[in-house]
Structure formats: structure tokens, C-alpha cells
Length: 223
Ligand SMILES: Nc1ncnc2c1ncn2[C@@H]1O[C@H](COP(=O)(O)OP(=O)(O)OP(=O)(O)O)[C@@H](O)[C@H]1O
Image (cartoon, rainbow, N blue to C red; front, side, top):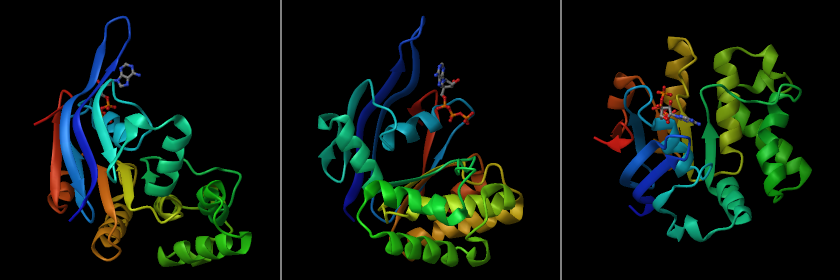
């Protein structure tokens, strides 16, 4: 398996009045087709690590390679392009745009990447939503959907540009147990059947146990 992410001594310190260390000397390699849990107590740096891996934040020190490319050498434009092509995000709260329909929300990353014609984007968005059991909800806005449905739209949006990597921050954290299981199974299928790599923050140790391995953080360090 080739590695998708190589993090070496990743450290993120916030320069507040008193410096706050969010992530400390994290070294980890994540291969393609891996299903990885990020666990640890509240405040241990799980989200902070995910933001670093997703190029939503920059490390204070250490290196992060994505598909063999050193992200430190990239300017903002390259980082944005790398994100758009390689990484899909799913957060605890769906962050769908409220005034757009499910299908339009899924089209947004494709529009940003600008590789498909309008009709193709529309078709791909419908296909992705279809595959997630949302064919009857294409034209609904987020407030017309249940929590589980919204989260599935968020997964479809994360898959819009067919990225190899999905980063999920407590993707089932705000869902009831049935929807939670459904979303977990979707993520699992992405890894097992579609060859995606999924890195998901979770508080749920039963869920983590069903994944390939755990990166457990305590006070920002791997433990
Ligand atoms: N902007 C900030 N300013 C000050 N402290 C921060 C900031 N962002 C995060 N922190 C602190 O850094 C630590 C790590 O936060 P982070 O959100 O990464 O942890 P987490 O493990 O994801 O927590 P949770 O499980 O509660 O979501 C926490 O103690 C948090 O309070």
C-alpha cells in the first residue's frame, strides 16, 4: 500500500498570551485504503490534528506530505487546489448551505474545481445522492431533511470531486444510533468497496474498534 499522508513531528502551537500546544510531535503514516480512527479525551487535539491533515491549518513545526508532496512548499493557491482534489471533509454538523438544495450543495465542490460541464455536475450530484439513498430528496433544502439525511448529503458533497481521502470530524456525533450506524456503514463501504481512505475522529470506542487502527491522542501527543 502506498502512503497517502506522511506526518512527521507535526506540532501546532497557538501563540496566545500563553502559548497553547494543540498537537505535539505527531508522526504518522496513513496508507491508501485505510480506515483510521482518531480518538482521545475531549480537548486532546483530535480536531486540531484533522485540520492539519486536511490543510485547513498549518503546523508550527514538522512536515506533512500528501501523496509525496511537501505541503510546506505549497502556497495558499496550491493548498486550496490540493484540498479540492484530494480531500473531502465531513464535519459533525453538516455545514450545508441552507439556501441551496441537496443536489446544489453537492455540486459546489465540482463547480469550484471546474472540470465538468454543468450537466455533468448535475448528473454526478444526482448519482452520488442516489447511491446514498437520497434520490427522493435531490431538490430539498437542508431544513427539509432529517439529521441523518443531511449528513449523507454532506458525505455526497465530500465525494463530489472523487478525492482519495475523506476526513471526518465526529461524523456521527450529532446523530441518533440508527442514522449513526448508517453513516458509519457508508464510510466503511467507501474504504472497503471504493478504495477511499477515511480518517475519522470519534468518541465512540466501539466504532473505533471496527476501524483498521487508532491514532489515540492525549494532550496533543500520540499515545
Ligand atoms: N483557538 C483556540 N484558542 C485556544 N485554545 C484552543 C483553540 N482551539 C483549540 N483550543 C484548545 O486546544 C485543545 C485541543 O482542541 P481540539 O478541538 O483539537 O480537541 P478535540 O480532541 O478535538 O476535542 P473535542 O473532543 O472536545 O472536540 C483543547 O484544549 C482546546 O480547548
